[in-house]
Amino acid sequence: MNLISGIKLYIEKMCTESGPGMKIILLDKETTSIISMAFSQSDMLQREVYLFERLDSGRSNERLKYLKCIVFIRPTKQNIQLLANELRNPKYSAYFIYFSNIIPRTDIKYLAECDESESVREVKELYADYLCVNPNLFSLNLPNCMTNLNWLPDALKRSVQGITAVLLSLKLNPVIRYRAGSQVAQLLAKLIYDQITKESSLFDFRGNADGAAPPLLLLLDRRDDPVTSLLHQWSYQAMVHELLQIRNNRVDLSERPSVPKEFKELVLSGDQDDFYGNNMYANYGEIGSTIKQLMEEFQRKANDHKKVESIADMKNFIESYPQFKKMSGTVQKHLCIMGELSSITNKRNLFEVSELEQEIACKAEHSAQLQRIKKLIADERVSIDDAIKLVALYALRYERHANCDTSGLLQIIKSRGGNTQIVPALIEYAGTHVRQGDLFNMVRITDAVKLTRILIKGLKGVENVFTQHTPLLKETLEDVFKGRELDPLYPAINSELVPFRRPPQEVVVFIIGGATYEEALTVHQLNNAGYRIILGGTTIHNSQSFINEVLAATNGTQFKHTKSMIKYCSPDNL
Image (cartoon, rainbow, N blue to C red; front, side):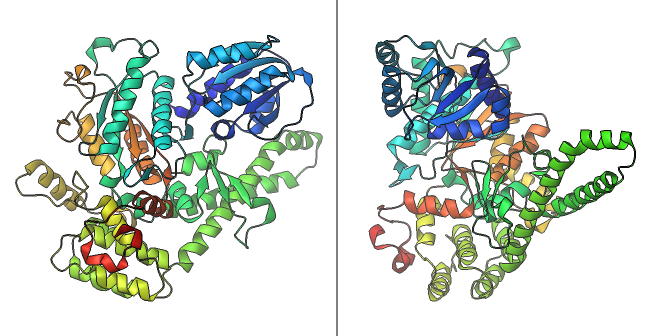
């Protein structure tokens, strides 16, 4: 279950089926991102693809009949129309057309009618309709998927298509479970089930051998665990995304004055950069020592290259030079990123802020935490964004506490000129009235299993104060693989597949409202323990993008659960 390998196989198929000879590839905005996250430009050149063009942007009318054209686009109405115009007036000798998802018969018929010169050689569906971020993580690049706490129609349609494509590319026909009580999860589950039923011939994969349970598609709601998206992260990939932002495997450093010109945009792909691939889940401290080792190895090789005395030395130098050059680029790139992470961490006092965030997320010590929060958020060295996140975490944990003083904290934020609307919006989006499951371990004594689990967790102690928190997803997945009863909390929509008592072997988790890199780390650790899990989300959040999504999702909603914070709400929500 490797998503990057799946997308690569599809691209290989396109390049080989179009035969030898020079080729151009025609893409749309989304398929450009899909391909670039799995293949570099030099990989495509090796497959005789020399030109890349966008179907949806201004192109020259020059006829290039010596080129074959691979078309790889999403089957949208706009793309079909643009392709129809292209086929009426073809510029290339032959067209090999691949759609990234299921295309209606009527559209195929329409394209056939437009192809009067019979230049189309192939039309196929290849189910590469999602962005593969890591081998076990995909995104649909939908930064906002809700308005008024309900689906945006386009985001819902795109989510159905993206998840269907993931299932088809992994050849899975799953039991679909959704989070009970979540209307968005239930609606998505129903539409995916309808699509699988409608396209039953595509989903007719071999039955489960030796009575193994069918795979599971688990649709979760970000509102059950808003805490994971708010915490500062310390693993390499998550930290880069939190502080510098990763977009389509690229980090834009053009705004950072201390960065040299050649490093203003960096590509971070575990597939194309071995150092990053091996260390993306390592924590901040481990990365520092690993980069030091890499530096020492690089210096040793640099010294070897200075000793060019004999013909044999020259031969070795020429043979190893490309690898040496590549290593030099890797060292400089990661030193540059670590330098930026280090300066931001020190400037924003993140060690102290993060320790308090983790304490709030993991321990109920109201009065001590309240005093520390007041002290920190009034400190000018702590950025206003970090101060707001501390208040947001406090408001989520102590929402029902008798002495909850969220209003007092918001007053301090207001005096510093911060946006106070964020906290009431977050409570409305993911407060106690919405959440299911057990986010803060507020266990009743009657639940013996959970109580034991928490006591054991407490006895084990914590290796690192900055990584005490574990996402709710970990607990949910452990329940799935231990074969615990899922029904009241995660009902199945296609229950005829459910009589299996055995736990599923393969699980695809999709989080409506976005996944995080901390959850990807959890999935990575479980996969290393022998499970098979794929994680996806409408987007991959850092704390800032999550807050923006919360504000967009609650825009225009009338707030009913934040009466005590009424003077800090936006006028639109009253």
